[in-house]
Length: 209
Image 1 (tube, rainbow, N blue to C red):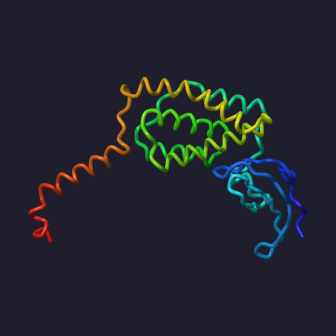
Image 2: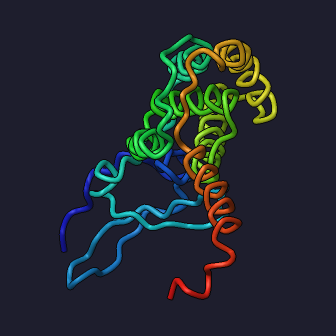
Image 3: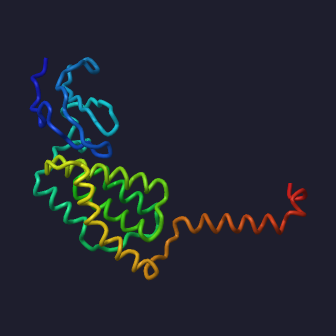
C-alpha cells in the first residue's frame, strides 16, 4: 500500500474551488481506484450544497487553493475600484476571456471579472451567459473576502458595491463615447429585417417552395 501523500490542506480548512465556490475540507480518506489506493479530499461546497471528492494529488491541477491572506483580499478589494481599459464590445470574446480567468481562479482574476462585467453592465445590459458569469464571480469574490477578513458576507457585499459604483458612474458618462457594441445589436437587426421581409413577401410565400 502506498504511503500517505503530503496533504496541502487540513481537515476543516476552507478552500477555493475555481468556478464552484468556497468549500470546506470535511474528510481526507482513501479508496480504491483502478486497483490502487488513492487519497481524496471530500469538500463541501455550501453555495451549491454538495460534496465533491478530489484526489489529493490533483488539487493543484484543478486549481483548488487555500483562502488568501487578509492582505491579499484587501488588495483585491482595492483593485475593484481602480480604473481600467473598457472591455471589448464583442460579448462572445469577452465571455471567453472572462471564463478563462474564472477557471484560473486567483482572487485577482475573479476581481477582474467582477470589475469588467459590472463596468460593462452600466453601458449595456449583459447577455444571459455573461450575467450568470458575473453573478458567479461576484459570489465567489464575496465569499472569499468574507472568509479572509472574517466579515459577514452582507458587509463585504456593501464594501464591493462601494468600490464598484464609482466605475459605474464613469461608465455611464463614457457610454455614448466608446460603445460600439456589436453583441446583441446584430440579433436585433436580424429580427427587424426578418419582419420587414415578411411584410414584403407575404403575397409570395406560397411560391417560395
